[in-house]
Image (cartoon, rainbow, N blue to C red; front, top):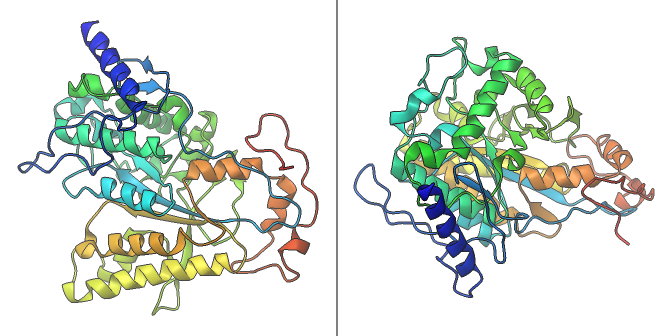
Length: 423
């Protein structure tokens, strides 16, 4: 009880100083790196101005009101050209000594963008509590990506807090990242997926108890409500995951491969799969993910020939840009991009992604958004307009122009959808 009282006091203090002009902390990359295995001491974090803080459970999460910087979606008007949506998403998001989470938060903020961070639940679970994780078809405490230490949990929690307060989305990449034929996620049943989802949520909702970091500020959201989508490890197990997620109230999935066309729903979820884009120097197209570019460049070597790093990064950057302009000047289908916080091939893919963010996110009629914002917009549209958009092929602009193509007045938005026609 005393611990909970201390947590409540710290949250109230954080919320109070958020109302000042200076705030509690500056929006920085976080603490300076310490010795190997350490990341420095965590700082207090700003809460939304005027927010009401209601702790949830052990105080690992809290209700603080509506998410800041989450725009209200609006229906397209008759004859209006759709915006060009671009989603940058990160599998297994967490903050380590590379500080890529904090870096790309800043890149997003500087370029009028928000992103989706698929948090791995085991990144909020310390190694000495690993047996709390009971993965389907594996022994308790198993994980292909390990667990975390207290400092890593504190740093990841700090980045998750700041990311959400800036309008970014916190999704999930689940837990142990099991792939392949021996108990991989592709072999899991619907019930096993439900167990994995519950555990991924549970580790986020109890990170303070499990880590002993009881005096830190909570994550400023109710994860049961925040979590509306995911991407499965290695893009495996989508069929049964989608069934489980649909029953659990998820709104989208990004575990598949698709062409650059307008999305549709699958088992009640928006199918926001990553897409195939041109692969410079090749006759085949490439999936919009750093890992897939790497495999088609250096094979299974995560650090290949250094003389080729710049060329490989340029290939990914130029491929993503070709895909972007194909949609921007064509059917305006949302461009879905997936990444990892990794330094594969000398960090060349991180450079490529950053270059793409800087080039596309500040263009007219472009919205670099999270999946959450994209599905809000999709749900707000007239289904007839979306059905017509889906008739456009990859890179195909309407032959008679957008004013003619979407000339019908939109039907009124039914009660309960997030958008409404503009006056």
